[in-house]
Length: 237
Image (cartoon, rainbow, N blue to C red):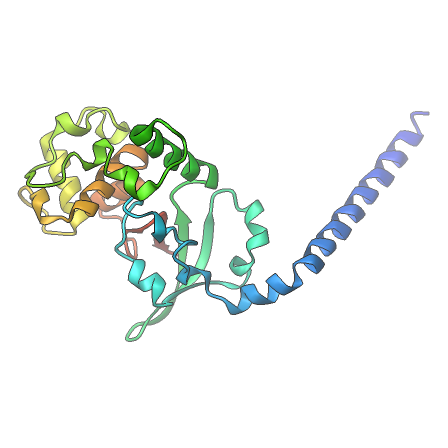
């Protein structure tokens, strides 16, 4: 009985492998039209795909024009959306082109998994309406992220203390530097919040609360090719 066990396991393994190959072939066959369409279409110019339609409930807009102008495009396999099921971390290889500098390879990363980004949307809605689903754009103006809109001069510790690990116990000096980095201005003095648009202030506070990663990269002078855009972080590969 025990002698036949390895043989049975070997057959079972081969059968499972065959079923997997057949299943993959069926998926490819069912998505043939989408497969060819994916290679022809640059989804990074789609407002909904890059979540530009959610702003100001987003992490920034500094690279949106580059996305919409088609300067950034996925590399070959990154164009195939049915492979996203294996890409839990939402990391993609892409090409970025500038007229004078030519094309270079970059890495795109959404600032969270699909579920994490959905959770952020739901948290914003709950803060604004008490419900998990809502109009995100309208909801942002009803949250604490809009409290600095208007003629507010500085981002102070009492506003954001405890929102995330980055601002667990913040000093005014730290917050001044975060705001300067966010505004991409000189590294001295206090950058007045009134020099930012209302939407930019909300995006800054939302980033501090939910995912300070892009702010940390800016604060540390990490070499990134374009800070953040919507839910994306862009780095050289």
